[in-house]
Length: 187
Image (tube, rainbow, N blue to C red; front, side):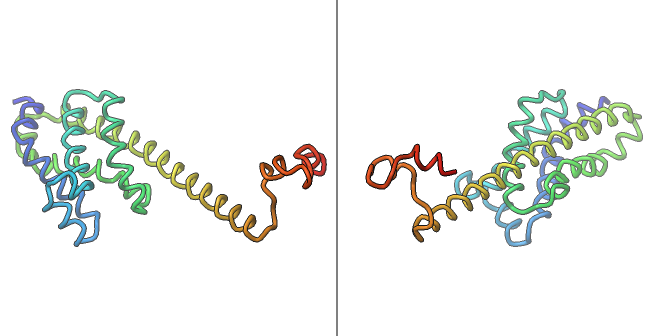
């Protein structure tokens, strides 16, 4: 029997096991909440992970469309990027699928010698992990960029309140305080 057919037959068991292993990377209370609440609005993290792994699994089976996969990965990775996972921990959920496949299909793979097909699937999983890492790094860069902008805005506001800087727009409006051109020349 072809590996793809086996994977389709055991799809629900594989997805459930993969989802459970992913949730183990979260603290126990959070993992239990993510697992038990199926509502998209009451549990957006659990829902995102659940829907994402289903879509990723389908893409792995049928060949990876980078655009589609990027969207599914992005949804999961964004959640993990803001939760202070290390980069390796954030993308490790992808490699958990290899473990699940070997657990679920070990006997069938040995009996039907589907090793070559398994290597193809595992290669796709590896490609997915590399893509996930790139997405994670972009998310983290954006988070740090937003934090830096927030810090700059807070600093500016504090300096302005302390009257240590003057807003250039205020200078333009009040000719008695000088012109913007005069301020620029002083720099």
